[in-house]
Image (cartoon, rainbow, N blue to C red; front, top):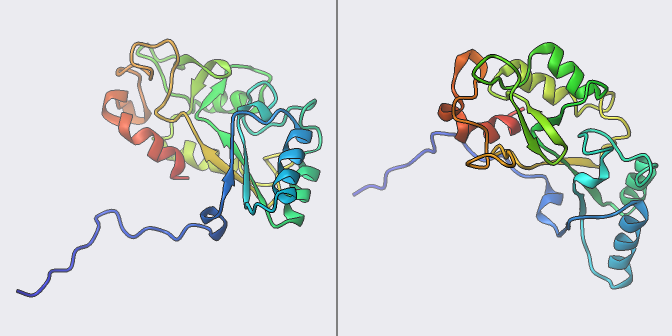
Length: 209
């Protein structure tokens, strides 16, 4: 019997960047730029090759994504340039929950555009996560995905360079102190869809930008 060819319904896998196949150094948490430099130099001192170092949420200004803590990471470009000299990369975190803070540009713009998941009475859904009270970007909306993608551009993401990459986390989506650790099933998404219908797609849509 002649073998049958099969095809995956989701298409073929993209090739990952070559550096992603190397050794990545990550822990929670690196305290500041000096800590990053010490770990980086430690690998050299011990003749251990590595390609990428990862930073968790503490590198941000008050757990506001797309920012840098001005006290502990005051010179992020220089830090990235030092890594680049050794042909190394930096990966930082970006979560789907956005700190409720009218002075935070990401929150302010998303709020004004109506880009957050709603509750059953039409208000922005708010839940607790790492930054405290947070709203959650509605990635099921194509306009939100396009806007979110634009936040990673060099002109938007201050002090980012071409050796800076992103890891997505907590996009179950995680909601602390909730019955199931996630947003309610009746939270409302783009075009009136309940979260119960889209829960398993939420993280997929975040990375599909």
